Image (cartoon, rainbow, N blue to C red; front, side, top):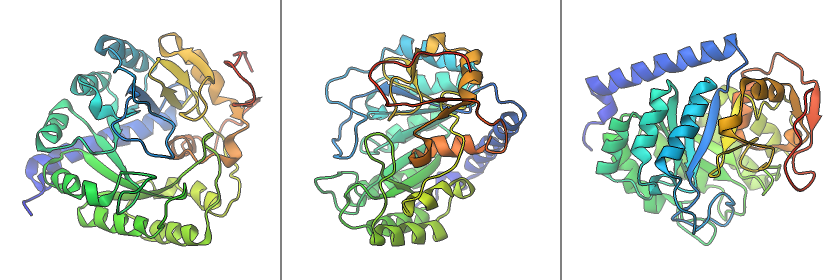
Length: 342
């Protein structure tokens, strides 16, 4: 295989600059709680795949207009958002994705993306390099595609080899257990391949439609703990919450969704996460630092059995401070939440 781009002088320089920005982000997050650390934003709900366990896509939506995406990203910039991640649907179906990434970087944010990887090729990877993408995550669900998921190692392996050779951004391959996948040991095969290519390897636990706990079977637990003990990941210290999930036990933690973590849907509304839509349901253009501070102190009743990894990891930054003084119950009723002070 050709020499990996990240092993060249330029690749090492790009990685060093990215690492320095990440350290600065952590320092700022520890110094102040009044800004979001991570926002995930949806530029396209449309997806080219139809995974049976996923409720975050459709087959009819048009991509969000570029100028509207600029306005939403600029609003995140005004809030001081440290990292902006693009999710979907499938982000690579958006015709102006490179411009969206550039705008994210112009706010000073670290730019990330979650993709199924199907639409990647050398030219597309080079464009993402030039746009300034910092991080990419690809979730691979099985070794051979089946009726549950087409995101398989067999289909995507050539894409991974291209990423290994040409990508200047950080790549994480996330395998999963739970959710009805036939062979839990596929996660071990996927994780091994990711490490062979020099990528980060993580494992996630599939949640139900409300982002809640779905305890693992004995075989799934065996695979999860085997992956946990050998994986190469920058997030290992933040993933202890999954140990309880694997055992079917609740977690005691302070969810900072709506504050340190924001999810902005294709309609431009801020939600706690992809599974708790309508809470608080405020347009990002109208979201203020006061909203961030209020939600920082608001406990969410869904938290003990939550499996949404990105929210757990971001909330962990503040696990040692600021007990939450008000509470809300996402999903308890129809409609949007009435926001009131704590």
